Amino acid sequence: MNKPSRRDAGIAAASVSAEAPIPLKLDHASMSDIAHALGDGQITATALVKAYLARIEAYDRDGPKLNAVRALNPDALAIAGGFDGVKPSASRPLAGIPILVKDNVATGGEQPTTAGSLALEGAHARSDATLVKLLREAGAVILGKANLTEFSNMLAVDMPAGYSSLGGQVKNPYAPALVDDHGIPVVQPGGSSAGSAVAVAAGLCTASIGTETSGSLLWPASQNGLVTVKPTVGLISRAGIVPIAHSQDTAGPMTRTVRDAALLLNVLAAKDPLDPATQKQRRPADYTAGLTRDAMKGARIGVPSDPADPLNDCYYGKLPPTSAKLMAEAIQVLEDLGAVIVRASMPTAGWIGGPGTTMAVLNRNPLSAHKGTVARPPVVFLYELKHDLNLYLKEWATNTDVKTIADIVAFNEANADTALRFGQDHFLAAEMTRGDLSEREYKSARAMDLLSAKTRGMDAYMNQHKLDAVLFPGAMGASIAAKAGYPSVMVPGGFVSGTSDGKDTPNYPLGVTFAGRAWSEHKLLRLAYTFEQASDMHRPPPGLRPRKTNATH
Image (cartoon, rainbow, N blue to C red):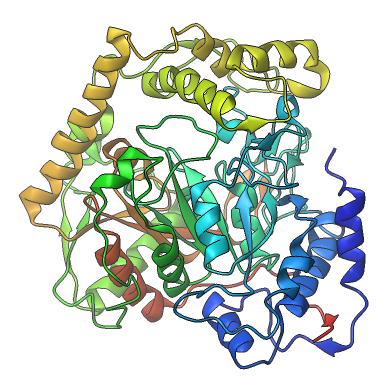
């Protein structure tokens, strides 16, 4: 099911007819470096696309078979040809730069938009999502669609990260060969934006776009040693994105550097009449302004870990030894940079959730270690899922007979052998709701999420300690920030290892997250940039060496 189409194969084959070498190491060249090389005429957009296609053929389709790219754009080479000789500029800062987008983000033309579901195989979108339009207007070459956890990990309880019935399993490039008896990676590729993250980490594109409802940008960025921005809800338009829950859904960039993430935010952060949440947007003229090495001086950074309150230490208290050591070293870097570290536990009411915010769902996943027990996904997710997904299918989906979540459930049941390897317990629960968000239990759950995570959580914590940002290990702070609709910026923190099923894992990345108040992306980017420059923890995956790729200038 993950074999490239004939047109995909034709594009990949074109990349091997070469004359001149690419002067960059694509496995870790920054977007800024690539834009500079394009501007100086060292490479052309066509050569760049061919080089990435060669890496996709070598490492995604062959070799370790990372499976990060679900489908290539058959028009990528033609689009790139239109940018040969065009220099990136203020009006088109991404001219000729190849970018992958997650396959729940609508792309018009010949590219399907499937959310990784067999039920939506061949489904198209009526037009580009707003963020894709902005990328194209800025000159980006949409290289293709990235694989993902099916329906952004809202189909089944305990579905493995990076698995979809249409695209198969994404592998972590730092440990691609280490899988369990069911072929599930021992070192996971991270949340639902797994393909977007792995593709950037493995040098299969310059940058990518992922989405998050709670952790789906932050976790894969952490697991793959990347930078990401999980924006304030409303900073980037959600129009044309296959949804989970509009209360928390957002898209965001996945890059190798903080500056690259800031450059992409400059393009993507725009008001959109199709998304009312963007009308409250506040942003600077330039997210790259103020990215300096001294931005940490005097910044008050909250570390939600108080040794005197161990029972309330849900973020640092249970870290494995290698992760705890990495975070201690990261905190020391911040102190050396002049930050004021405030150690105080997050108010319990902030992270523990309010009454009625979760829903009991029986876990029937045949491969789950917890099969037969009761899972407790968020009420808001399940109720908004039916409402929002039905709207997307009605207003955006074309070339498909699937128009409701009920249609998806029915298709999956009729094709259970291929579509339901891990079940669809979340979808079954969502289908039981009215779908119009009129239920009192939904309204109460949403109000309690805001009360606990925002008012009594992040707001209370940051107000009491006069904080500029809160520091979380990896993606552990994803939920509290996501429920509040608040932003987070992830930057590589170093490497950890561990043991799973009796197998020692190789070193793989762990990120550190700076979270803050609504519309504080600029401040968080400055802090993350200072840490990034001082720590320098980005390392490409071993074993995916730069190829001596040739491509026509």
